[in-house]
Amino acid sequence: MNRETRTFSPTWVIALITIAVIFVGAVAASMSMRATTAEIAPTPGSVEAIAKELSKGQALEKAEITKDLGMAAETAHGHMARTLEGLATAVPLEQADSPPPADTSDVDAWMRDLSAAATAFETVEEGTSDQSVAQEAFVGAAQLLLTAVEDYNRLPSSPAEDRNLLLGSVAERRDAAVRLWQAGAAQLDTLTIDSGGDHMHVFLAPDGDPDAVPMEFHDAE
Image 1 (cartoon, helix red, strand yellow):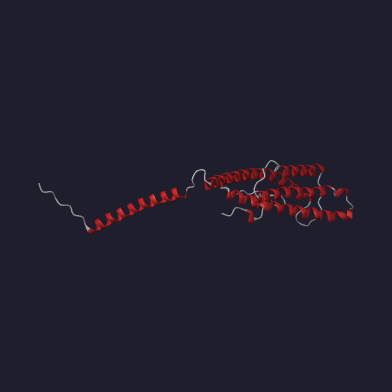
Image 2: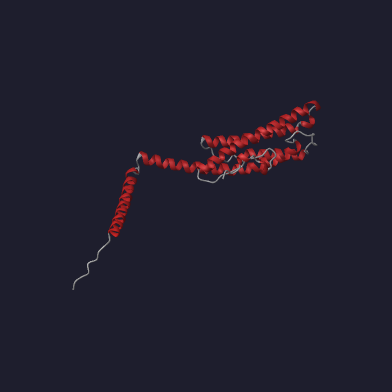
């Protein structure tokens, strides 16, 4: 019995050839990629392999220290914010009539908060230089604000003619402490992103109000 001869149009032939070329090209590319990967993979036990493992270990260690630093900063942030909020009622951000002095119990609470803020970082292991910069900024900010509160605590026993000068010094150190804290917070945010995490914002406002944090420190989305 005669078989019917099947014919293909030129369009189909071109399409089949194109598909075949693409398939062969994909297979060749895959094989080439595997060969390249095999070529660049360091030999186990070689200097390159050891260096790669060390680099991986250092990255993991840095990420862990950054995580601990972030947790300590969150704890200290609460202590700092409470102190700034209370201090703003005693030493207003804007020039105004002098408010009544803060209660001794309030001042004592501020000093306890600031001591706790500074010691929150004691358990964080020493890390890289950029991690140390962030940690020192946080601790320095807490200590600087503590000196401002200690000076405020001496206000009642100071001569009347010195009180305005002392209040001005308290306000200046408060603002400097906040700026120093912001520097540490910005560094921590960068460290967290670099280690694969999300943004971490522990910024402060001079009056402790989270809604008053400057816009440049908000999420850039």
